[in-house]
Image 1 (cartoon, helix red, strand yellow):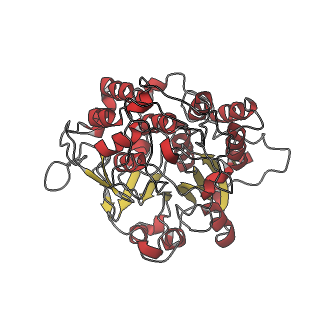
Image 2: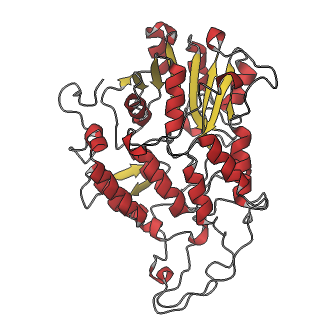
Image 3: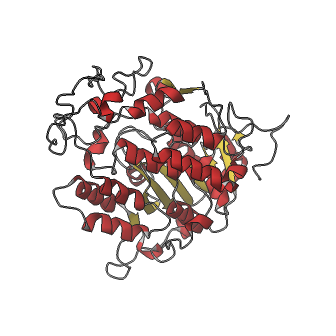
Amino acid sequence: MSADTAAKGGKFTYCVGSPTFNPDEYAKDTARRERANELLAKDDLYGATVVSFNLPERDTYVYHAMTAVRLAEVQRIVSMGGVNGLHAWYRDDEGKPALDPPPCILSTESSSLASRPTSLPSTLPFFSPFSTRPTLALPGQAARKLTAAADRPPPRSDIDAYIQIFSPSTLTPSALNSFLSNAKKSSLRFQVATHLLARRHIHPALLSSLAVPKSKKPAALPPNPYLDFWSWSCRNLEWCGPAPSTEKKLQSHHVLPILMHHFGCATPTHEALCVLRVLAAGRAVADVGSGNGYWAHMLRAYGLRVHPVDNMQSEWRVNWVPDTLVSDGVRFLRSRDAGRDLVLLLVYPVVGGGVAGGTEGSFTRGLVEAYAGDTLAVVGTQNRNGYTAFRGMTVDEYMEREQPAWKKVVQIPLPSFAGKDEALFVFQRGERAPKDVAEGEGERKA
């Protein structure tokens, strides 16, 4: 269904506080997206968000996630950089910086650090990874030992190389291999590259059909603004990808609620969208738990038919599709012959249990058990941090333990927000599942 379709009872509002925002018009407005990227290059998240979504200049919307924040408050935190552990993504088992700290940095009155805010707003407690406030130099004072005990950020070149892995202008397997081959064995980049390559999996029988060539004309592809905002977040937050220690990282950043409300919980890539298109093989996709519909929007832009389904219990500032079916997922599948002729897609499935209510893991278990189709795709964490589906195991571990009839055919890394570790998993069963290839007969692992 076209995004121009009006909701029942009148014009559909895609963005709270911006009655003029329309995803289709935004996709066609190259100049506006370029202007947003120029602002992001200046670390102006506030301006880039206002430009992208036609927000009022003095935006006061409250973003609710783990805490409540406003866009101006988040911009203030962005301007603080990595002081007092705000960018402390890489720690060892003892909580110490994974890399040796750099020499002390001394600033003068002209230092940009001296003009940065010296404290966090008291309204932002939950994302803060520290209990004491930053102690930066006041204007007119020389700072002393600002970063002596701070985490050393990864080199900008390593951050850019990580971002390039997910660019449509690169061949993802080659970019990953290059990310590893150009890393020093003692470096954080080596840890990240080894971690990502060890988890990447495409069934040998599908290596040829799922090989996504690099795009010679990326500008001709459907725009993916989430990838632009995510790329900026990596550079600004000094993040070069997940390492083994990321599993224990419970810290996030104040930027995350902004990205979640405007785009969703995980960033789609050209490779992931193409892989889903191939494996759908002309069938429609049931995007159950579709949230604000960004994945549904992007899949449609790539030519797939998508049924976005969500119970709408979560609040989003932006909705990318106007036709989300408000329904329980299991009820929807029952109404569609148990989804027999549909691909089932779960993007960041909730864990449940505890303060969230319900039973831990029941959302994913219930849908898998109710689904009679043969192709299941899950976007979620590929470590045991408990952010998606299950608290103590990954979705592929669950499928192997409790759903042995299913075969994992795809696991490819996705752009991960700082402190997280996301991937696209695809499972198939029955005649649709590829036959195992004897060792040495298939192509090398992608």
